[in-house]
Image (cartoon, rainbow, N blue to C red; front, side, top):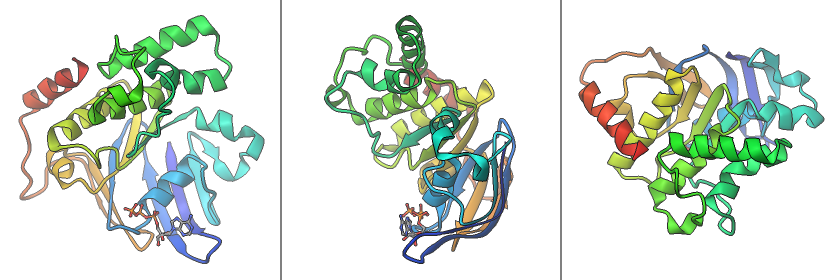
Length: 244
Ligand SMILES: Nc1ncnc2c1ncn2[C@@H]1O[C@H](COP(=O)(O)OP(=O)(O)OP(=O)(O)O)[C@@H](O)[C@H]1O
């Protein structure tokens, strides 16, 4: 699904953000990307979404070598990748409906289909009925859920999130992760860059740790020593909470 093969990323100022990085993420996985500030997490996500290009090496996303994706084809390529950001990146002068509809409008989807898909996406994040609200009328957690609805409205097979819970308290962070897990349960591959120790403690998913632009640790899904897990039943309750 996603394969980095000896990938380097050097920015024009000479800074090497990724250095000989090799990593494979299978279809349907949930992966946490961790590491100190500057380790290369955002750069890795930017390569997957073609916001940046590898300097060297091969990167395959959904069976496509990104080196072969011309600038003209980038918008179509990006429709396969849902992107969630820490600061939501919502348009404050547009309604919730318009914000979520944006990727579909850009893709030229018909009005009726847009209505259907936007409502379905808002329903999945528990915000059906808020279509006509403006972003600033929503709480921070709700705004983040609008950002998630926008990311999944095109039904992408891959969802990437850069510090999606950075501004949220622990309870809201769990809600966001539970929403991601719901998408994962229907087959979406989810990659989350996070410093959020609370989340890392509570979700026993695969963790890939970067340092200096390389993978220095790759811990498979499961429980490791010393980790405290919440009761799975509570996670389900949390997800239902998010859907309210
Ligand atoms: N556009 C850019 N131009 C030049 N250097 C950059 C650029 N973006 C990132 N870098 C550098 O690349 C390195 C990796 O940065 P990156 O943002 O990928 O790390 P990160 O792990 O996501 O950090 P954080 O957790 O602070 O967001 C850092 O040294 C950073 O200064």
